[in-house]
Image 1 (cartoon, one colour):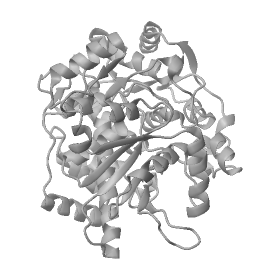
Image 2 (image 1 turned 120 degrees about the vertical axis):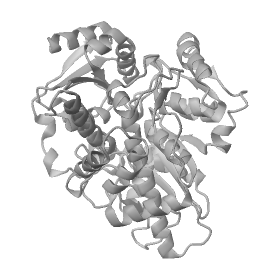
Image 3 (image 1 turned 90 degrees about the horizontal axis):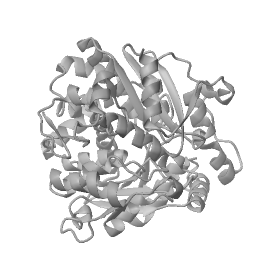
Length: 490
């Protein structure tokens, strides 16, 4: 399997090359030359693998379709090391929870929550980041090299990356976050880490400023190569690939439930995904392209509704820091969706030249591009199954209350955005799976506002907000971040 850039660089590269590289040299994002397409028999075999051998075995089977430069035995061992009940809490790793009335047991709609937040940092980012840490360490040891990871986080990527990489041989992490814009719990998770290889940098700006710095450093090829800069954001294909696996796990669990209830006419499921940077739902797009029976992929945004605007109008309009709202679902306070380029590349029939024009020329020059009149825009829904919707702070509070009162489940604000947006898109006979993004404790202030009480806190995080912190506040300046990397590596 070889990989190419969404902007046209077709220099043959294997998985382990792009694992350590992040962005392509031309500024594009890597994608496989073609998505492997699974037959009905293939899906039946994978269903059996998951049922009999578990999530790690399913991950190995899917990753093997894209990775042929790691020996199969080693890749299998890496998956088994990563996806364990000890780390993720259950054998299923990402169990489904059916929304049923707590008093009557009735399920007025076929809606499920897929629990992705049982890992070390209580957020779905652990699902990919735990594997990424093991892949990085494996490949760096194989090559005898070191890696400086530069990442940006709006809340959950940072802690997931740091917990996955802390103490790893040959790895330093430089994690940029928007100063003062994450929840108190999210800040404490990151800034309380004292590991020598972890460096937290709070940028005076918004997430998009952090992400712009990461891209600017990655686009300086001389600096990137001299200081061995890699990425853990979902611009890294390896991370997105790891997320593809839980769509298969969700589908297999839903179809198993339906088989027991003897439904007729079942053909697939739909997923609603709270999304800011488009990485989580882009993994669903990849799964659908591989042949997983997904009816609809619904993008749920908060007040920062750049993605919803595109799927409604065909206009992709990024926004500056002044126009990026600070909301109660802060991990989605994003106005430049990095992974969106991968989908647009596919939407345009893998047209690298047009993709490059849109993202490298039109977007920087005018702040938007308009595909509303492009003949392929209608395929976003008809061919690729994308729908979208927006949720507000009032919607989040109301949904958190309703889900708690009716179903006895407390959900975090981002998952609440997903539940709210999912409802109008439910189809008879098609299970709707909402991807849970984090445990409620990470956003305690909103839970208190909605329910009037504190969310449950896992014992290992008692008192985390009171621990000493190790963080450096810096301006949104690429040169300053580069200088910090240089000084740290000296």
